[in-house]
Length: 242
Image (cartoon, rainbow, N blue to C red; front, side):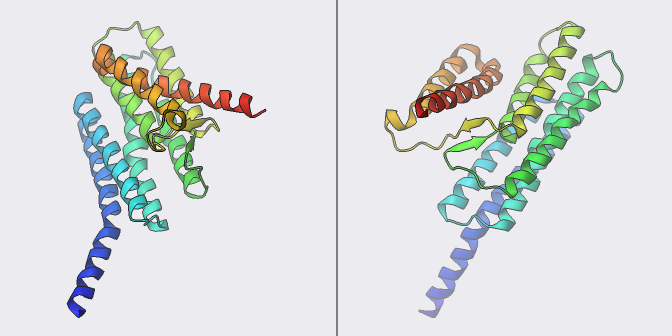
């Protein structure tokens, strides 16, 4: 009986550290992504970012599964996210601007994303969220947008003036979305019913269609679609409630 108790104790201890292991793996992949960016390898950097997002998802999933959402895990998660989803997108945009923009030092504006991401993550740690909604654009989704965009941009010759305006717009618009009060829907399905998950099913169908037709180019489009769909459905809900 005593041995069984010791075994149970060690199992519980192991279960508690599993989310933190996934958080550290997220951080590790974020560091690897930065290494790839140093050699301007946007493809492998984007793959590392996908792994960071995957481990970030597992971290949250296992924390909820074993009901181990504690302050230490929350702080560790935000620190890892700051590297993987705060610094990585800024360096990505910095390199994209540095390479194709004639105006000196303008590429340093990309670090506004790091600053705003840090603000969002700190605010997240001291606030309570509605489980069904996410307020503002999350840092992983924002990073995925710029990582996938970097791969696409590499294959196109865009006029410098248009390129500069578009990049600056995306930097500041993403910063606005990160700290905005716009409600984004979560991907946590409420059973399988259409009525309770209508927005998720519609978004899923649109995403599958875009992936089948546009392939890698679909990722930025899917994220834009996610933002527009969230805004539309929440405004619709507000109208119905009045």
